[in-house]
Length: 109
Image (cartoon, rainbow, N blue to C red; front, side, top):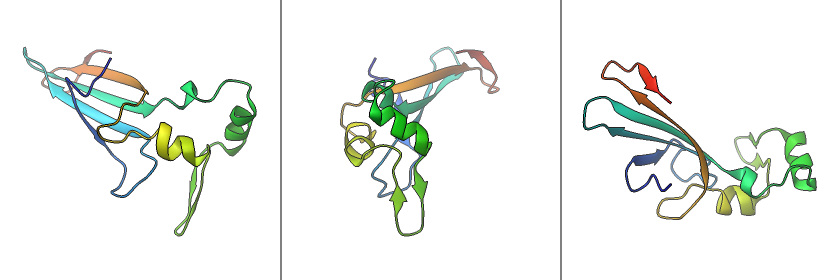
């Protein structure tokens, strides 16, 4: 489902970031309330369970950011290109969307 058509989707990564791996979305609902979504780049589509790449990524656990460089959990081609949630580019993500009432209480997931 292409949420870019119906939702305002935006990154929470800083300007200039190359590995945009998460995003948020929000939209008001016609009858009141709103939907809020969290969208995470679907790295699993490219990294098969039990593969050498999977084992390496599991060993690293996360990308490590230092002041002058970073050590990626997955190769740059994935983190900065194929999985990066760039504006105007088709990408896969895993999403969780909450329906909330006007008070911000979750009424559906």
